[in-house]
Image 1 (tube, rainbow, N blue to C red):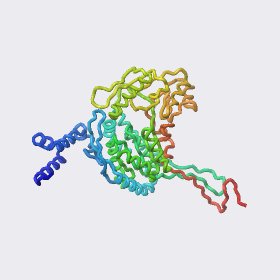
Image 2 (image 1 turned 90 degrees about the horizontal axis):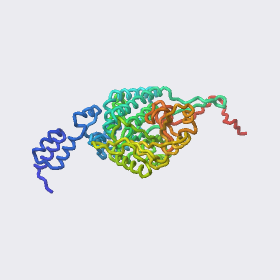
Image 3 (image 1 turned 180 degrees about the vertical axis):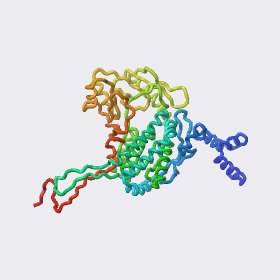
Image 4 (image 1 turned 90 degrees about the vertical axis):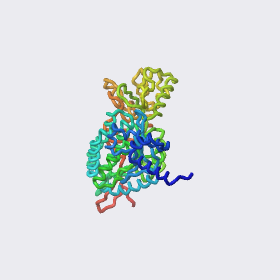
Length: 495
């Protein structure tokens, strides 16, 4: 098809006007015969939430209509363009340009170069940088918490709580930066010293899930940094704006301190980027948070190269909120909710309350309680990640403990009792087999001072708190002979 020079100029003018002033173009489109494709593009740009006055705070986080999804000291993104949607109304927020495999390779190389600089920074000074990151997050806590709520779907106070958790972990890591060290052990040989030396693993890959798009990265990032590692983050594909906003905050701190931005790199992407990280021998530790099914695949890929992994997988510790709760994250989750209710009914359950999708915009469903199911019903043993509570009646303490432990997951558990004997039996070797064992508090939430993680199909990893810092470092047992003799251990003599 031949196009006149005048028509080419006309189209070019339209494109320039579209880029500079969408609102003006929309008004113009009502009076002129624009092509359907140009009209659709104009409407799409105007309906993005980032352009609406009530969401002007998104601009405070450095977000626009189109956002770079790669950071390695420089911002970029030449891969697939994805649109982030608000689960409360399923309207588009903004777009993100994901990483290509070439950009992933470039980012890893830059991260390796950045590690050479970061590893030479004394640990207490690394802690000072982490302190500044925490302060920067404090300054944006309301806007960033609002973004978590807008993009992920949890209520605002929970979104702010996520950012606060990152801040708190930064404070924790600052103190830890002056305390990391190995023991001096007694040597059996005279004139010898035996010590444990801890060194960073190098590059820590961090893959996080949609349900905690800030906090989980914060746990890993703050601890990994003070240990002397650099980080490469791949957030969930459905919460890319949160990944971009957090990285912008961290990047500003690094750049202000004249440090390589690649110390905290980011590549937005899908399974291709995640697979590359799992298989990449340059990734000294891969921290993965997500489903047990995907976690198995990740574990096999990392193990194939004898790599180190930190897994935080499925939980299945049911909890329900009857007053304040947000929408499910995606339309697919709504279908999973309905499917779980159908399965529960087929397996003998009785719907006591809830069970319906709410008639309003977004992915809202009713909190649901189901009774009458046997303890070993397949749906009871399945993590559906929706607000459904299965109520089971037990006769004895041993029976209740056994039912708690028979599921494949082992993240968090709780008992409510005033019987002190039962408390310590619950905490003991025949009690709960979960990584987090609570008494008289819900199963949700955890303090940063304790190691967070679970057993069995939950992965066995521990993030933040306690001695979890050891997972981000490698240990060497060092023997130093300062005598003039050369004795062997165990008194061995070659005679």
